[in-house]
Amino acid sequence: MFFNEEFETLPREALEALQLKRLKAMVARVEKSVPFYKEALAKAGVTSDSIKTLADLQRLPFTYKQDMRDSYPYNLFAVPMEDIVRIHASSGTTGKPTVVGYTKKDIETWSELMARSFVAAGVHRGDIIHNSYGYGLFTGGLGAHYGAERLGASVIPMSGGNTKKQIMIMQDFGSTVLTCTPSYSLFMAEAAKEEGIDFRDLKLRVGIFGAEPWSEEMRRDIEAKLNLSAVDIYGLSEIMGPGVAIECCEAKKGLHVWEDHFIPEIINPETCEVLGEGQMGELVITTITKEGIPLIRYRTRDITSITYEPCACGRTHARIARMSGRSDDMLIIRGVNVFPSQIEAILMGVEGVEPHYVLIVERRDNLDTLEVQVEVGENIFSDEIKHLQALSVKIEKQIKEMLGVTCRVRLVEPKSITRSEGKAKRVIDNRNKA
Ligand SMILES: [Zn+2]
Image (cartoon, rainbow, N blue to C red; front, side, top):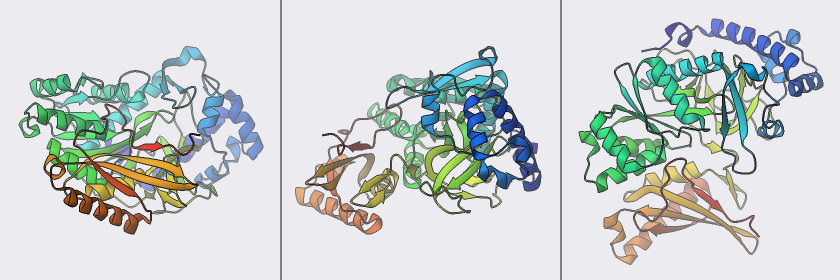
């Protein structure tokens, strides 16, 4: 099933011709209207007229998150304020947030791409979408909301929080689709269980989970606990919001990037060299239709790989692999690169271990130490101490063998790790705190 069959199945050649046309037009717009790009393009020696093929994209300069911060709030906007109909901002963990503006057409495009994403996930008209992404400056809530309405499904604008009420509404309103972060879906499952509610008695059929990296193992856990088909969605406010890429329910093997609006590249984050299919690196995205705040080669910091192989669903758009994490989140423990999601994948493979964990990194005597705190089930926790010890040693060994990093595993009581209603905090890095 497609939302826009013509564009979703455009033959590669036609898709690339469209990308080139749109890329040239976008560069022509920003070289006139955005002083930042006018300067950056002149420095790189590129004009819109000198772009002849898609390979010329590699001659264009990168845009970094810092450039957006430096342009706070509106200096990267490519249209006058009277054409901006919506403003969002991404949560800045440090300092000011990054601000994005949308024209009426940008909102229409976003709504269509979210509607396409819903259909790809197996959602259709008649579905009741329980939207637990936060409404507000964060793009998740309104992005999914407009897409649901564009599709013609019924949307419940729940936003995050008040989990008991969420579950009651899901039960009473007959929600068939759930949208939230993967960690919040597990929190809901746990809360429902405490209330004596079985997800098998609910009507939920599809879950669309994103805004944080999660593993294949966690997908299996969520699908079992919530009794639904779980798909991964990707987006970031700088580029648009949710719906930049999504898994199709037919294959669930990589997320289709809507390439008629975005050009993805994978680069080596250190050397900036563009990498080939299948190679892991940083995702770089160029927006080719955005009006409010077009971005050239935006460095997402997200680590993935790309494939152009045909997909079982019939969509011709390239697929990126599930995110391994953000290059910012990558931990370097005594010289070894580790992503929290890699540790998660190992933990999820251990029987009796719950999908709630936190990684604590310290520096003692100039040596990095990693402690993995993970919850175990009630029956395991009440087991004899020696059994618990044997289990931690087993997990420590697996992490050492698979990731090459030494760590200490501490099994903790059920429900002792703080739950999140939005993005889960998986890492506490105390190394730079003097
Ligand atoms: Zn597909």
